[in-house]
Length: 107
Image (cartoon, rainbow, N blue to C red; front, side, top):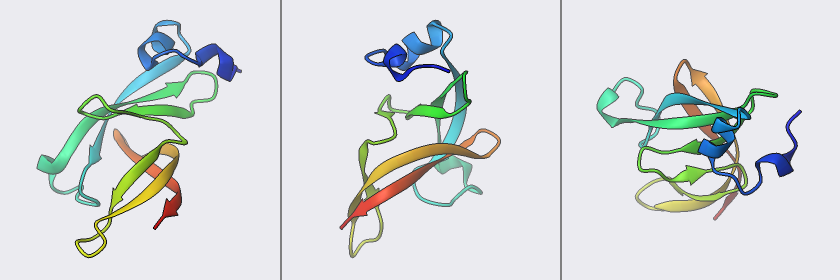
């Protein structure tokens, strides 16, 4: 099993180069559930540990890196445009399509 200290302070690429993580090219949607509209899907990278196949972080199409425990803005509606949430994990919902789970939402 990989110790957290072994990856602490390292970039996802460094963890991949050390053989600790592998990268999956994945697609995601910026605007909710629009899987049928491929023009709104973006491509990112999901990094998972080789030891337990758990996704450790996600790199968006624009280079922003997200990890469990990070706080993110969640677009909800025009009336209440944003909530703040905490990322709990990432999982594959379809082949090559990643979903981010939010643990806590702050209003």
